[in-house]
Image (cartoon, rainbow, N blue to C red; front, side, top):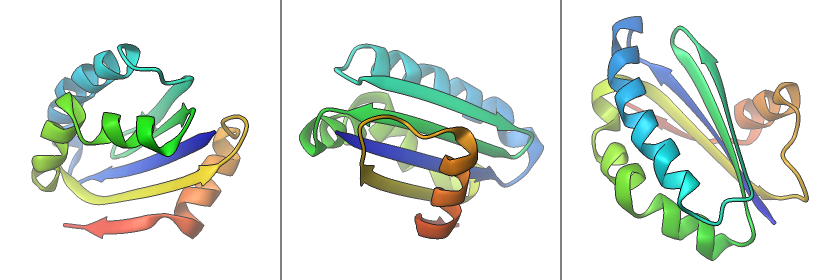
Length: 111
């Protein structure tokens, strides 16, 4: 199975409302897919998600379509930094482990 951890740091706390609107659409999109698991956490300007998929193809189909694809087009408006880390695993890690992984291994996009 394939897991993806995402970290997003907002440009300011005021961008939280824009993030929330986009996130709701993305969560609804996840619920319509074959995702095995989804988790999110965050506070103030730092937000994290984790998803678990059967394979790379399902993960890519989700990332490159619908609300997720549309949100990525506008991410530079709200995010200072986005990190993603994708890896093979049988289950999602605990948040403490996930946060360590994304900071150490994540691909960084700065805006």
